[in-house]
Image (cartoon, rainbow, N blue to C red; front, side, top):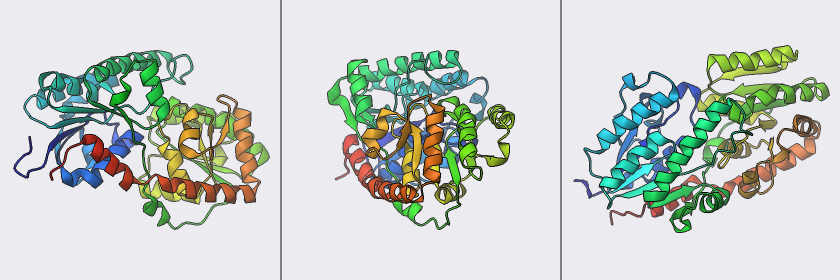
Length: 388
């Protein structure tokens, strides 16, 4: 179904893109990095929101963008997602593609692809599943939101399982859970992780700031943000000069609630909530830090962890199984929920210059295996189309 250029046609659905001011997900970063490298081999139509377009166009130049109308962006997130999905179903019906590529398992990316595939069985559908929601009882944040999120993911999984030709996972744990709990066909699943732009981080020139720690992620409960105040209060008891920089987009309500938590504990002078920062500014702060603090409860890969290692910064995080698979046991971990243990890991590192240096060196060496160029080549093989 190649167009006049002779290149296969691909529709990339980045239709559930987070608001640009709140930061972007690791999955969004992944699709941009990959198609920045292999996009020239295909004729790309990228379906996304206005916010998505503002970010993606900087990374993926050789593409045609179809942008959802701004009037769809009213109401709560579920209502907006449903409107986006309906809009995209109609848009896709007008086109013919060789491949439909769903960049996430969120239903605005899955439902339109599923509906298109039902009517165009010869079109190859590739869907990404990067992580599986944990049990709603254990997931931080609003329990009703967690239940709804899990049900919606089940909805997406059923459709992906039924009609997707290939399913991309970032690690083998997700693959095993999909084939076990959800009865996916293992033959359809391909594990191809995230990568890291090593040259970019190598070229950031900054000096280390003694006892500075850093957190970078979207400010949402699942990233463990409301555990940071208690953790940090224990750190400054042992390292009074320690400073914490918190970087990430989030609602004014969440920022205020987080700031109030630090205020109540009397440690706000040692913390700076910086909000969303552009990459260059954010990564300079990361690289100048001595420890990266990441109490996230659910990660499909841990791209923020990879960025810290590429910056020569040791990482302290909850003991998520994925870290052992992806990062060769180099993440300093604490049992989930044990805030005192988490804080002890941080303060011990800040007081042990030798171990800090050893972990920084080991992390930089390990992360070299995650080259975006190699991962993009593998993704091209998964897509399985060639202009030659």
